[in-house]
Length: 456
Image (cartoon, rainbow, N blue to C red; front, side, top):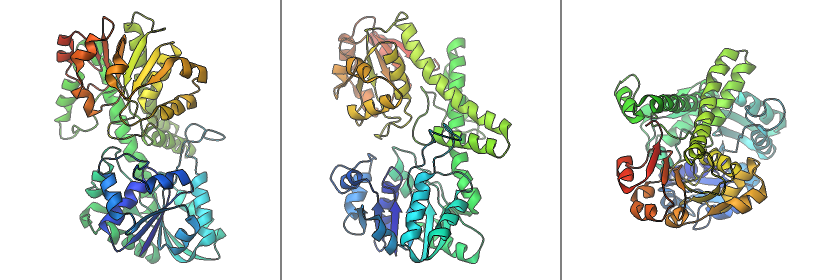
């Protein structure tokens, strides 16, 4: 059996690496038109940082795992084609700012149709709206002379930072297909691959539309929990309650559970905001404005939490940060990843720069070029970045002579820093804004820090 994956990003690369690792008799080729990205996958420095990914790739690469820019030949040779291309939020036209941009999905479908001969199983791995499979099938059948296609939905439920563990021991694998005998045979083919290492009872099969919608709904529910606890964190700050104690109290209720009840500066990443916005657009499209309004509030609360955090830094620093140095610890949207898409740090740093602060960023995995790119996308002027934004790989240096420190990513190594030394070299009073409630705040206050923590 031969598998081809179109898209060598955060989903395609790790997922295919795990399949190749667990199924050494299956040839897996990951394709992308981005030559630089493919070169990185073939190098010692992978383009995606995930704990455990290096070992998996190095054990399978060259044996039955390959990374290539030869899309045409890889599609032609494959029995199963995973489509894992980007589906960003549209920035133009109808649905701008909410609907998924499916142009890369359509381009992939046209390429598959043009070069395919004989039967192919095409698997949606990208996050897409309900009924995308219908459009995919239409494009494939209208543009293929000799190909016969079965479309399956197999959404990913990976959490960045734990993606390899999620792939090796997932809560569930979801596969959706049509009810025809041919489609069900294709479903069983894909089931048999995952069943090599995942118990069969954890592999769920549904119809196509349920599978496509389940991905959006899963992320919407998780985002909702984060926005809910963040909303309560603001109330805790006004009333003297402690958000961690509240979260622990409600999390012990078996009907609620403890996960995703950690208050923070806000959620980020490539999925949550994009998928909730997509869900609101779909609801409006199908004539459900009340449902759309409900889910849109999740996004509004998340945006408010980021704005509230940045505003609090300004107010605490005596209502101005103009010319003041603020050290930002962490720019990735969460620990153990170099992904910065929709990171809360982008918006907090932007707001501080717009208040004319001097911002020095330290992140263990994110380079300055990536930070500048994200801020430029938010229309921060280049001259502002040149004058006011700095980067250092040394957290001690980042905090030297700083008025305040903002922790925006929960990197474990931040707990191990010499905070006594950091405090000694800061301007006084030394302010610490813990946007992840990462540190021992009582210990920080003993050292002399003035601490602001979410929900406390």
